[in-house]
Amino acid sequence: MLRILFFSFLIIFLIAFTILTIQRSDEEIIRSKLADMGYPEEDYIIVNKTVLYPDGSFVILSTPTKKYQVTAIDAYYFAKKYLNDTYNKKLEKHNYHLDVDADSIAEYEKNGKYYWMFEMRFGKKGTKGDFMGYVLVDRQSGHCKIRGLFG
Image 1: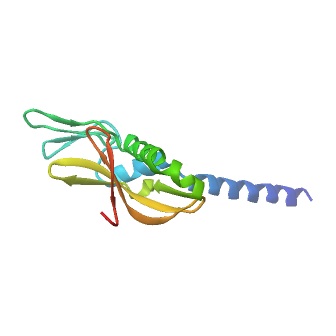
Image 2: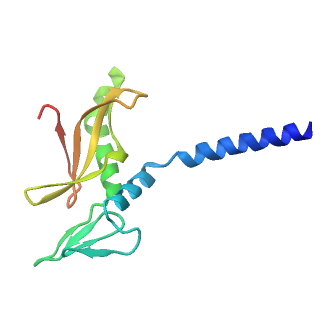
Image 3: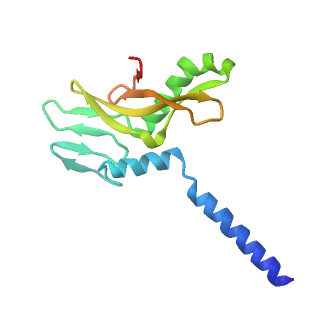
């Protein structure tokens, strides 16, 4: 009887431990993606006259220097806040929502402006939703804009 209790406890503990270690927060996912993009995990690195910091901010060493201080995690929360304030309050009465996917973070550059880019998803509450475009967050100012399927 004691063996059965011991092994039951052990199995429950291992299952709970496995589930808890598999789930990662959005911030952990973003930090992992930053490392995949070549950002350092600590301190800073200099690549092609650009200083890269672990949080995703960077400085271009030119005259004058250009600092892009919006971090990847800040950009994620700016994008979520933008969607909530602008669209989700209107959509919630219809049981729909727009959201950004932390795992989809990417860098985007157009006409000398740098952005953090997240996939935007649209769907019913409680679902992941379908891809509808991108939310771009300006890396200097934090301003958000949408690049959707229709424009």
